[in-house]
Image (cartoon, rainbow, N blue to C red):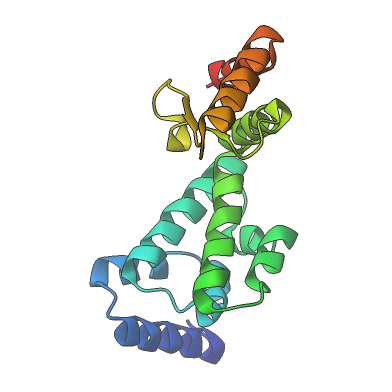
Length: 182
C-alpha cells in the first residue's frame, strides 16, 4: 500500500509530466523505477526543467550507469561531481549542460580518459595560434586535421616550420599514439 508521501510524489511526477507534455512511454519508464530513484530524478528535474528529449537522455544514461556499476539511480545522482554540476551558476541550460557533461564522464570513463590524453598531447605540441589541430568528435574516424591560419607569408612559414619541428621531434606522434588507444 502506498504511503501519503509516495502518493504525493507520484502526483508531483504526474503534474511535471503534464506540464512538460511527456509521452506516456517516457513517464511509464520513469515511474517503473523504485520510489527513491523516482524522487531523486524528480529533485534533479526541479532544477533542470527538462523536456522529453533531455529526460530520455538522462533516463538512458542513468539506467546504463546503474546497471554497469550496480548502484541505484539515487546513489548516482548524489555523487559529489553531480551535486557540483547542479550548483553551477548560471541558467538552467548551463546547469543541464554541466550535469550532462558529468554523466557522460561517468557513463564513458574510458572515452573521457582518452579525450584527456589527446588534449594533453595536443597541448604539448605548443603550436600557438597559427596552427590548430583537431580530431573527429567522439573519435569517430581516424583522421587528424591541422589548420594553418596566417595573415601573411611569414606567419604561414612559421606555422609550417612549427608543424615540421613537431613531426621531427616526435611530439606529433604522441597525438597519433593517443588516438591509437581508441
